[in-house]
Length: 301
Image 1 (cartoon, rainbow, N blue to C red):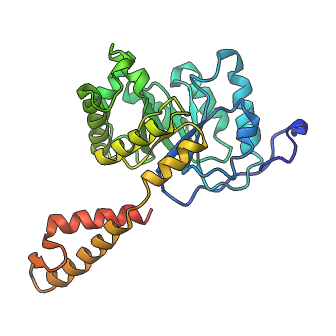
Image 2: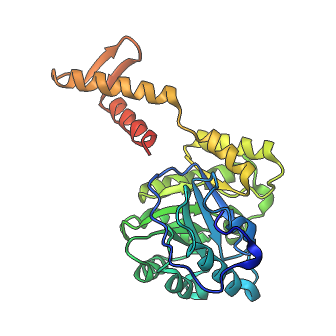
Image 3: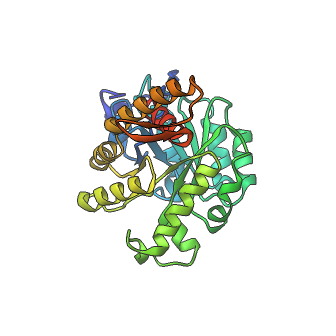
């Protein structure tokens, strides 16, 4: 807990500046409403790999300044956190630019810009953002869905795309009732988003499942996303965080297989042999070896 008593909060900002989070895990990304002080007060103890403090659509316009102040106050007294802390600001020309400028000197890991449509919005956000912080986006518009694959050359600080599937469906003039894993349009949207994000060199987070009480369906979605190739997804509350952390956990058998393939290929490669039969895993060649390296790289995050 950051403060022992929420009834006697400090009147001024503190001097703490949380150090950048060392881990790079992205299994769970929990959205948190900064108007809920009890939730903010647990920023140092949450189990989510990423916590996103939301200034955008969950906050009424009349309370956005209050939410921004709450974020600044709690961050300025936060000494450490095992979660990567992200602040989701409003669209860049609808208050987001001012929010980034205000927050720059506080300790957190990344800014996430909502409702991005064009690359110049990303470039503007980066021009405002402190050099040590990352930039994430919410992909919620038809324009961003069309162009994401071409945004990989913008800046190395641009690292993550989050799928806001409900807003995206609206932007595409499609009903939200389509949202079912058996729907071919939904499968196409998820596949295109994932592949385009990877093409651009970005991590791709799965979408938010709104009914936090329906843990069974959420678990099915997490497993479906993992089978597609996603490595993490959005969460609403601690129960979803626990499920996402379990579903997207490192597969130890896959890591053991990858370590064996790496060792065997490098041994055979030293003899000039890049294709051979292995008694344990069958034929191994360079593409199999590269996939093993990818598995080991992800397991070390």
